[in-house]
Length: 334
Image 1 (cartoon, rainbow, N blue to C red):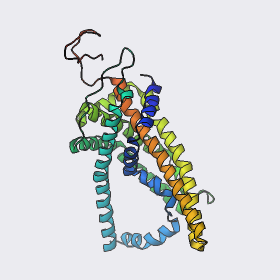
Image 2: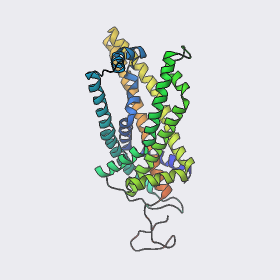
Image 3: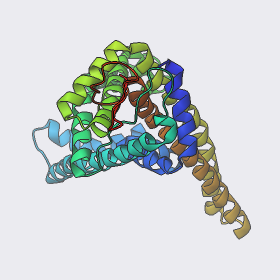
Image 4: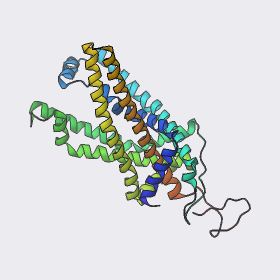
């Protein structure tokens, strides 16, 4: 299939199946998108504030004494991170699988197109085991990202220490200076994230649509990516860039509305102004969520449509020639 067929077909299916919108948005938020969604209403701490809070603990650790509070906070953070990774990842996998099933059942995705068209795939039923397999495939696909984050963190810490002790430019924010000092770490993290997203998405569709196990799904995803690199890159980057274009102005508008609402609340202005400011923020935030939901559903549907139309029926047919008649109506072209 052409690179644009999956993108266009998935967009039409997405617009015609609103049921996939909340599923895709919830999966996106569980996988870290909640940070981007709530960013407009979160006040980030300044470096000075972080230093004031963390300095006593860091000093104690440097002197060889680990306070009980540091141990408790560290253990709690690790447990919370693992719980979010496993439980949240499983829930996101279940939502992703259900969204893929909805798209796969759509007539636009399964309607034969041309001589290479095939029947609809056999869709695996949704249960906890399928979600667990999707989670397993996603975690394995993100192993390179974990390694890149570990290595990149060391580079960022080293660059941050150099900038704090010997600033190269006091007029530029330290975050930009650190990124500028370690571009190879940023590039490695982005590439590893892209690989994990592509391989994980294709593997998840093979698990749902073909009933593959984790290893077989990952192997098929890698083979597909290597055989059609330009197609998978287009399917990944175009919807991702559209999502960025949607999220950025929505976040800026919601942040501005939230700042205005806070100012009105602090100044104890007229109640009508308070209601208007809060209502404006809510409307802008909801519009941003709706747009993000549609784009997230499109991003997910692209991989499902590509897997159905591009690879045809999962399994095979014993027909010797296209057009052979069989009484059980199971003929298919591969």
